[in-house]
Image (cartoon, rainbow, N blue to C red):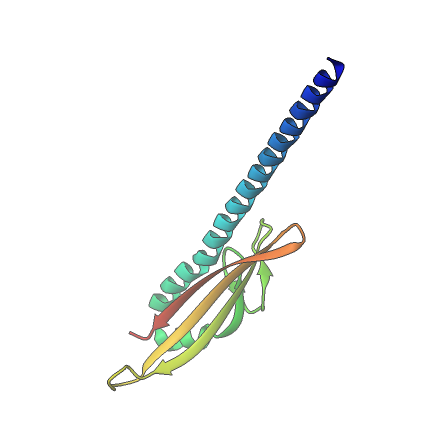
Length: 139
């Protein structure tokens, strides 16, 4: 009888430990998914900002202003390789690549600027990232 009670308690203890582990993992995964969604929003924001800049500045000034590596702090673009997004745990980098491609079948070259917006953050001992890319064309 005593052995049966001890075994029953052991089974209950193992079951409870398993439930606690599942709940902990679920909470961790939920937090990671939330941070990924926030990072993606931060990576998209400078691309939206740059759409407006292209319209305001015109192609030549836009191309001259936005090239190489820069960063977005959540408000403005700076001439740094990376910077912290103000008030967050995230870091932003922007890469600008100018190119000129000839359409299939010939024609005039199409000027393009490819912008890669990357946001990184720490998740425990790992560095994670969200990357968004947008191609701007002259016309």
